[in-house]
Image (cartoon, rainbow, N blue to C red; front, top):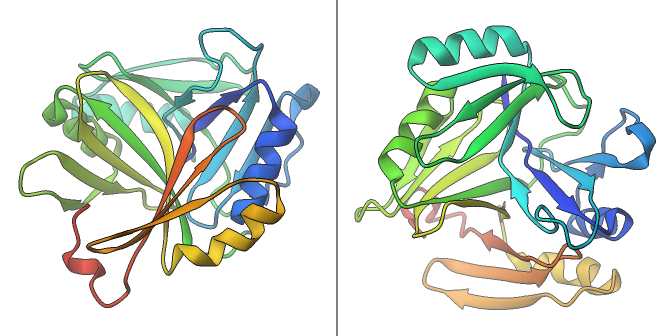
Length: 239
């Protein structure tokens, strides 16, 4: 079991929660300890929010993370595949977590999560963009943890992966290593404008050669991108 579940650090957890709900994500059912942590489900992937102190290093940042069924078994299989992995107690106090460290220095956690979330599949998918100077090692790490390769660009500047239980990760080449939250929408992103605007956000829609994209400023300070797909050309698209 593997599900994409990035962790967003935000000093405004209620505002971040309203933003995700305006996008169409549903609150998870499990209780959040001390009101400092919340999980939202897109139907394909989840997003976790962690309340942080304004001005701290993690303020507004996104960590790549995953849900797995059994942390120790996941760690064993990942280590056998060749990735560097350790098992530890998670910093947020959610029990055991497997920490995977990639050659570019990016590390991410895999924690225990439900196999079935109770949220039906939707047209919105959680997408994490993994920016790295060296795409090859990042691609190998995602293969080692069990993510399935999808579309890749001819120039080798983007490699897409899908997690079996929901969510996407795209490796992109860039000078600085980091993770960013984005989404994919199976349809016209203009469908999302009304609810975002009603929530007090200011989405901007742009047209591209393969469909429309929406950009909107999130309460944690980052600009979040939602890419829409034209259903008749999705299999041939690279963006």
